[in-house]
Length: 244
Image 1 (cartoon, helix red, strand yellow):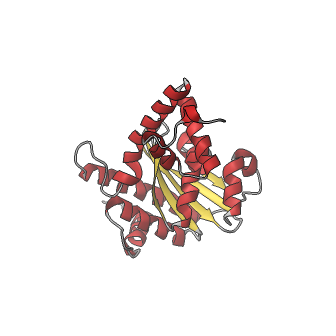
Image 2: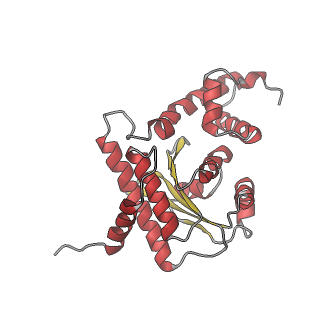
Image 3: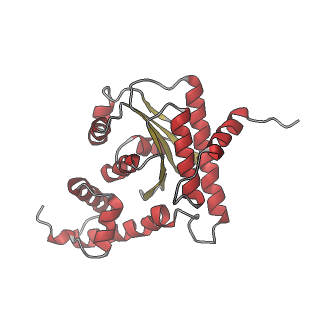
């Protein structure tokens, strides 16, 4: 007898029925549609999927709307936020009211969320066995917890995201990124690592401290961490010439 996970079937159908947009392709396009379906199903104002690695490298894989890309990206510039915590703890991070402890937990990121009209946020790790791939973030414009059904739906959306990422990577050429993620995610890892190495040499500090300096620079300049790394690699920015 074959048991069918009805919730998984329903969530997969919601994702499949989400209309494609211009520019949607490959894994990135599928994840964008997943984020849009999650937004609707979970009564959210937005959703995003980010891919992470244990070495701190990352990429924003997809968001339900362009406005949420900067909120996803900001977590990695600051090194704090629900996505980062969910990935590190391997557990969902549920914050139904940002005015509570979140301000102390993520002082920079929670403030940015509040300024952008977000009042609640929930993050679900993307993982299979011991492998961690990233996290699914769900944003809401109103204070309130997820219902039990919404919570389980969110876990299922995270599972579908994992399957999408794994299937895409399995179909890619050996050593290559999944279709649609090359520039947005995987390619940035080598660039950020190279920038870390350059800053470490310029300032005579460790790679960990170099990443912290890159994040601080990104925050002060209000730029994406990937853009700062690109500037360092292209020698448009040199940390040994900074005055601060």
